[in-house]
Amino acid sequence: MKPDQIYQELKDLAEKLDVTVSEQSFRASGIPVKSGFCLIKGKMHCIIDKNITLHKKAKFLAQSIFDLPHENLFVVPAVRDIIQKYGQKKNSGDIKGS
Image 1: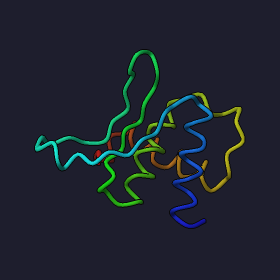
Image 2: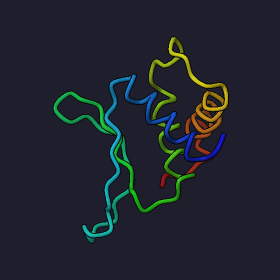
Image 3: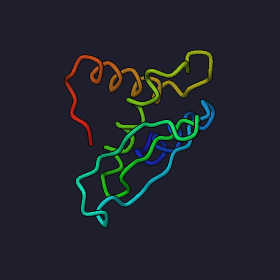
């Protein structure tokens, strides 16, 4: 799969899990901010820096989805592999945030 297809599949999966995915430009804030996963008024949000590479966006989203209950949803095998790969690295401390 192409990187943009993988990223779109990850975003679609996040939406199925009731996670709002948005991309924001953090550069204008003047404050060093990174992509993050948070709760806003009880709703899960994944806010991604729109200035990072597509690969980093997909990696961050895969890490965020890893800990959510997605096992009972259909996920394209290539995307499931990416979720497992980056989720396990996140939990083992081998990966740095974006």
